[in-house]
Length: 288
Image (cartoon, rainbow, N blue to C red; front, side, top):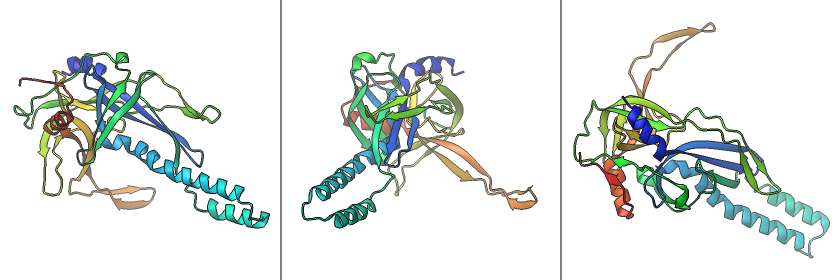
């Protein structure tokens, strides 16, 4: 059913790998998905995908101040050796080893850099532009017309890059990450549109809900119909209790097993298009 949608989505649904190195030396990578919108290099993903990058931007001035304080202690001629050591120890106690010292983004293609990123927190969307756009080729996506046909029972498919295990290391001499970049595989998972969620008095966001969950690595990816039209951008998975808790025995213990259904929530195409239009980003929208 979704073979045609997959053939289209593999061009505009692409992997994003955020790599970080913390002050304690820990190096890790996180995989997400982004959507290439047009020939100008504009992209869309989930806002929380940029959480690590925002943390890096917050930690950077903290580390700069800390290093300036270290340098001031080292250069202070009034300090004797014992006093200098004590001052260094007091300063070291204020370090947060979880600070992110280095951060890098790989967009599935070498040589791309991002700019003009705006994170629309209330919608969990991030919009930005990649350069050089000459490295990015279509076909580009068509978005579903939000005024017609969005109703429960429609078959949809979510695309993204779950299950990827990447090896990343950091070269401190060159201050660069080395990422083992295998051919990441676009993964589809089907479901039906179960409900339209929100907006509500407590949240301005409107979601389309699907009967299948969003998987780690699919955040920011498109939810499409069989024609490949985008109905939403994957944001989160809701874990809804089913209201029954069967008794389970294991390893000599008896306990209640709480039952949940995991449902994917994607930002509604109407709100996606409103956000794009507000920022002057042009995309294709279907007539129906």
